Image (tube, rainbow, N blue to C red):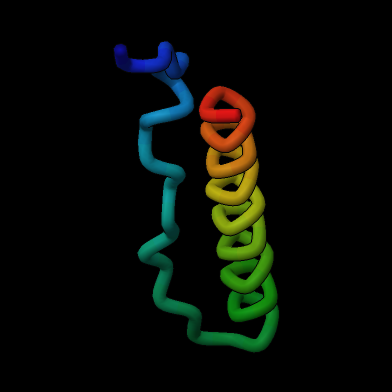
Length: 52
């Protein structure tokens, strides 16, 4: 029996392909990557809850 996992939980989190040219752009890229990691961690936690 397969558990039901909401569809949005199985979609990839966006990852920026930005090419920073300044320190400010690098900071923006770091923030974008942090948000992607938080998104991925949230989805892992959601899947873990379904499987428990």
